[in-house]
Length: 363
Image (cartoon, rainbow, N blue to C red; front, side, top):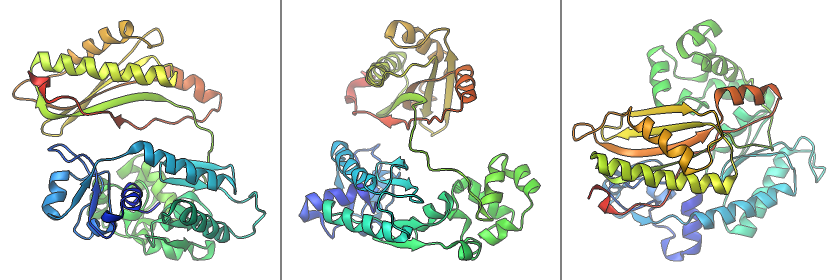
């Protein structure tokens, strides 16, 4: 989908159309979830601080997110996709892979299916979507972003290598800012540069990811579209309005984070034995601590002593304030090994924030 959260807000609030819009909490610690294309012209983008976004675009309109509405629209789009195939692998609320090799409409060309889905999304939701069509996930994902908004790009197998060779490495899946900087130091700026590197050298420089980069540079991606997923963890995190550092404030925050974790565990029915504490300091340094129990973690009596034990290992104070705290329960390494041996496919749930807490947490 194109600028999904912002597009939904502009659809439902006509007065926002044509204006630079950012969806996110307008506060000192607020972060942009999605920016409209009007805002992006000023350099506003997702995951950016709201305060930075407002400096870049003084006329920026900040809209509080309405996640329940985005989920409803996402399900509406999913139902449209299911008219064509059941092989749907969601990446997020607004993005998914579809395998239409065999499809419910018996259509021959995938591009025709993509065009129909786009038309139906516009008709039924009033929103635009961009689509990428190719023979593998890697190329379909890049193609979907190629002509946004409202784009449709096809990468034919016969032209795939030419397409990849001219790609900037920053467009390649798995290449973030730090990896890109590392590649640039090695003289790798395009797909063609990447393809000239040996597999051994890429593994030496990037570890296991080097194998992926080696294949991607040659248009090789054999990952199937997986429609059945099973949760691997449940977690939550909270960025504080102001950094905390006193033992009282930290323990209060830990207790409130545990409350939210317990709520999510009860709702999901997830059963795991490993508890992980995540802490991000005021200087953005991040650490995590984990402990595995001999029993499934489901209630406060089990989890709270473990959470306190993990927090006792964390260094904090006025010299080292805490900006963010998170807790999660996951499968232990032994549990994962056992379940991997059965051939089941699993996924790791995204860490989602919850409602802001009162400003009196340091009191």
